[in-house]
Image 1 (tube, rainbow, N blue to C red):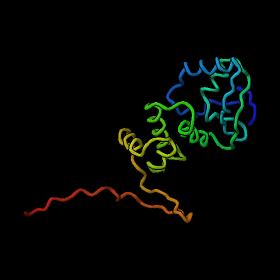
Image 2 (tube, one colour):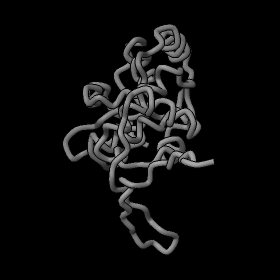
Image 3 (tube, helix red, strand yellow):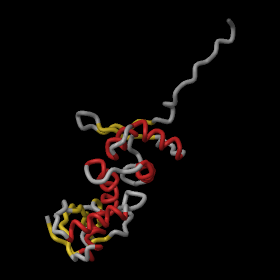
Image 4 (cartoon, one colour):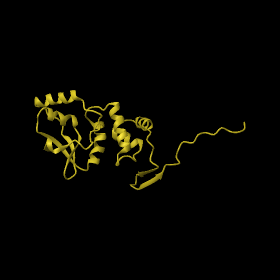
Length: 178
């Protein structure tokens, strides 16, 4: 864990997965900080030049509101795209629960993200912490088309690419003569 100056941390990389921060939660955290409470470290991704905030936006803003200059951070090596992908699943593991709007926003962004756009509904569901049905409903309501080719990793580690273009559900045909 490293102590970083808040001014070193970039929050402009579209790494915030939530639709909006909860100002009341930020204010509550800021009050707790002023009283000496300690919070878990935020998580940032370092790409060699910038520290991209991936988890801990409420804590980050609470430190700013409490007029603290530094914050403890866990630093991971990675790009802003990796920080974004990490952020999409960060609240499934801990922190404030995500709202329906947050989940829909995250799922939409995962369908568009270069690192996850070819993931299956099940992979997205596991990452975000929602059901496959939730991902499927969001996908349908957003009009997202499944990729024609998907790459899977088998148990033995072998990668296999499957063309899914013709895997649509077949509609039962009515017999002509009865």
